[in-house]
Image (tube, rainbow, N blue to C red):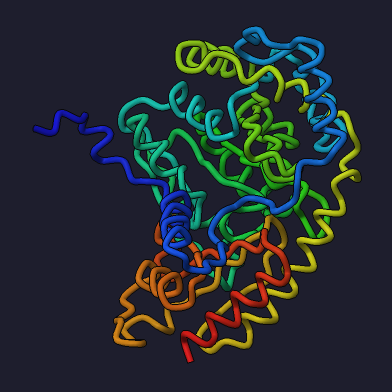
Length: 394
């Protein structure tokens, strides 16, 4: 008899991880799968960061860490916030966690009560919805369109707010769309929020450095939003450190204290060696990882050019991150190679089975008309993958 909790039975499996697992399964069967599903840079962690980790091992860092992170790391994060975002956070306003995903979960668990609504501009990162639901919150999806570069407008925000609205969660640059909110666009949203002083904002800025069109702006830079904004970041994307699992937040002291309290009961402090390495990563100039950003920009141009050569792929030009989020609804209702495509999930599976290319259905991100394609892969892989897709659909 199935004794699992209703909570876990109602939980979705992460679509990105599920697609990666399916791709691995097919590879073990000998199939040559090109993976464009995971949000993982294909670069190695820079040597100067690896050397800092080796040094930490040699210095015998091997004990439990403070739950909210080493003070030296929190100081490095505070310096980074000031240097890169013009944000002033004291160490007591910063907490370090095992990846930004744990930071998101901590925030949901300390901010949400049963029935509290969280506004999610669609598309949103795949785990937002389930993290909110796991913490008894109610996700409220706000649909955006490719014509508006998948960005929520002030009017849409105003229309979505109810007496139960507690938070807004968004990412900029956005996973999965690559959209970047400008200072003006964020100001328009902030002006709406001035009428609703009890609503808090979670600003997920993990892709801040992978930004091709200009500066990154943080919601917390507005004086009238500083106390109500929780800034979430980490080192996975910009520094190619996905497996090192270090994320962090900057927020009001009472929120940070509560997140630390929860984390103390769940995982305690993050890995000691990874924390020491991240001090070195964050103290370095962002220019040290610019070679990765330049390469991503080249790949973006390449993949957009190739996708524009396939009938039925409607794309916009993302300004950041390393994803394209094409609308593929042109294919819905069509039968190709004996398979009927009803939605983005069918389309994504079709590409995996027929083109041997792994992508992710947009349904997982709150947009059933699109698929997410990651270009965090070599240019050769991108060229071959799009060639295969074109052939399978021809």
